[in-house]
Each structure stands twice: as C-alpha cells, then as structure tokens.
Image (cartoon, rainbow, N blue to C red; front, side):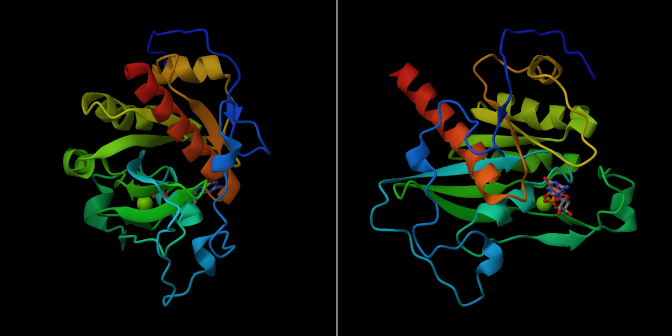
Length: 237
Ligand SMILES: Nc1nc2c(ncn2[C@@H]2O[C@H](COP(=O)(O)OP(=O)(O)OP(=O)(O)O)[C@@H](O)[C@H]2O)c(=O)[nH]1
Ligand SMILES: [Mg+2]
C-alpha cells in the first residue's frame, strides 16, 4: 500500500453496506422509497416520469468521482429514482493506449457524464453527476464541478493509487468530499488507519465501505456525504 506520510487517529471504517453501520447518519434521510416503492432504476421503463415531490425543501448537486471502473455509473444507476442518463461508449484500441481499466474485461466506459436523481428523507434532492474516469478527462471536471456542493469519491482498494488524482482534483477545486470504498470480491481488507494514511485523508473526511450494486449500501454512502456537508456548513456559520 502506498504511504503518503500522513497519519491520524481515526478508528473503525463505517460499513455502509451493513444494516446500520454508518455513524452520525440521520436514519430519517434513508427513506428513498416513498414515491413508488422502486428500489432501483432497473424497474423503471422508458415512459416513467417521476417528478420531484412537493415535500422537497432543497436540492444539491453532488459529484460522483473516481478512477476508471471503480463503479460510478453502477452507483448512480443503483440509487437513481429516475432513469439515469449515462454516456457509455465501447472502449477503442486508440483509447486503450491511454486508458487503463482495473478490469481488462471491462468493455465500455463513461465518455461524458452520468446523471441521476435521488430524494433523501422526502426533503432533499440530490442531483448526481458522475464524472468520466479516464485521467485525460480530468480537466473537464472544472465545468462539471461548477455549483457542486460536494462529492462522493469512490475508491477501489485493488488499486488505491488510481484514486489519488480524483481526490487531489477535488482538493484543488475545493469541493468537500467523502470517500466510499467500493468493495469487489477480490478486494483486500485494510484497516481504516491504513486506508486514511494511504489516501492522505483529513481526520474529518468520512470513509465508508459500500457496494455500488446495492441500493441501501449506496444510499448510506451518500448520506454519509450529506451529513458531512451539513456538519461542514454548520461549523462555518
Ligand atoms: N463485484 C462488484 N462489481 C462491481 C461493483 N461496482 C461495479 N461493478 C462492476 O464493475 C464494472 C465497472 O463499473 P462502472 O460502474 O462502469 O465503473 P465506472 O466507474 O463508471 O467506470 P468508467 O465510466 O469507465 O470510469 C461493471 O461491470 C459493474 O457491474 C461492485 O461493487 N462489486
Ligand atoms: Mg462510468
């Protein structure tokens, strides 16, 4: 594991895929099924139109970032209550010289953005913008990040270094973020201290484990981000 030198005293990675393992999360927010009982976008057909509920009091633009193949498109597709927009394209030979997917079997990649929407607790709408994972598209983030309240940075522990650019870019753009480790079957388990140290995270940056294919787990990861954003705003005022 790469060691970036910073250590801190954080303890115990929250497991966002568990029944309730995310500390400091308002369980009331974890109500995303109120509109039609749909658990995932898979259940939505092309004709489904789902309007923002009248109870909604606020909205936030949230980025979902991370390296190629980390699960950004999957997570947005899993949680979105509207049919997600995705811009998948088959990877070409020309791109293969530039882009390095974690899994050589992955045949498509996001070339512009993913877009989805989720309502938390009936009151807060998150508009989710997934960035392309290829390093060469990092400069395009500047536009995508405009107006974003925060970001969920997905990390794959099988290649932590691949996440450094995405996290560094969020810091450069001054976008508050939380980190979600998307676990894969062959992911190696690391302690939270090791992960924080390797990713050079500040002590207050949330770090959770999730499975981007699971609705509840992915929602919990987003809630950990929202809780963090609320805390950050309250501390600043
Ligand atoms: N086992 C496992 N597979 C996953 C998980 N998340 C995503 N996948 C699979 O990994 C592949 C890549 O996921 P994507 O969601 O396309 O990754 P991405 O971050 O959008 O990738 P780019 O758009 O290329 O940057 C897909 O085939 C998913 O089904 C996970 O949590 N566990
Ligand atoms: Mg994608």
